[in-house]
Image 1 (cartoon, helix red, strand yellow):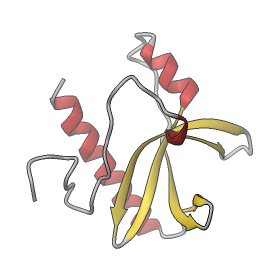
Image 2 (cartoon, one colour):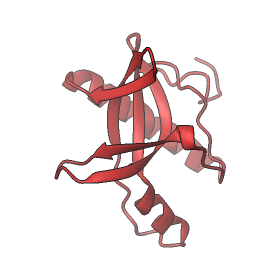
Image 3 (cartoon, one colour):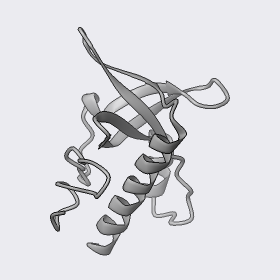
Length: 118
């Protein structure tokens, strides 16, 4: 395991975690939350686990509220399976609870590493 969290997180490979202020259109997706409401979300990481890529997504409105200096804002995190399509990438629900938990653990570890660097 390398010392760089962008290279290896112990459970799989993290593809280019970007902690910059820049948000590109390719990093934003529309998804439905558990209430069926359409939300704009930022893909904050793509984590590979057992040969499958998973997108870790956080709602843009919550991230923007957190940027306003409110450290108490709780940011929801959603995980989607990345599905290659002829048009690019699609996203699906994570069916495997063990994979979901492993991706959440890897993301939490990544965020701890990023927070330690601040």
